[in-house]
Amino acid sequence: MKRAQYKDELYFDEYIFSQEERIEKFTKVLEKLNTDDEDKIKQCKSYLSGFYFDLINAKYSLGLQRDEIITDVNELFNYVCEVSSYNDMINYLSLAIVFDIDKKRLKSILQCKTYDDILISELKGYILGEKKEYDNLLLKYSDHYKPFCDFIDEKIEKSEFIEFMDNQWYDTCKDCSFYDSHKNDKKTYTGYWCWLAAAIIKMKSIKDISGIYIPTEVI
Image (cartoon, rainbow, N blue to C red; front, side, top):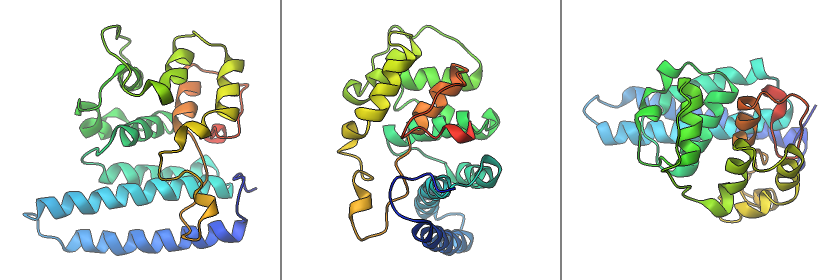
């Protein structure tokens, strides 16, 4: 059953078909690149990891189950060699937690220190099974991510977190490329899902929780 708030099943069927064609095209390009074309290889892999992330969102929106999505999650991590933004790091670590990706496959992400702050360190620590003190680290983007850290640290209750997710989170995403994408005619809408929220819920072993933007059905 379709999960997304906007667009119908036909839209997502067509989007997924087009995205898989795009992935096939770039995979063939990558295969043809010479090993010394390092910059082109990295760029192509970056495109592919982004394509797979959008595909995962679209498939979840359409209503597919965990076992129907996890292959694409694994494919995404086949192409992550560099992380180009804080938001990408959050998304990749969150997907890794939600889908139980082996930490050996996350070497390049876990070793990247460029975006480290208290939130990313918490996610990495969970993956590595290392609970450390991160009091000396600041949160880089507190306007957007403070409620997530507060929920991890039990400074806010579950009900407060759900209230934030249902009524405030989307408004904090106005600078994100996906914001209001359901209103344009470019067919870039894949659903509005916060994988970070799902990852934190899994980290905290919470079962009885749901939310408009939280992809809880694959945890």
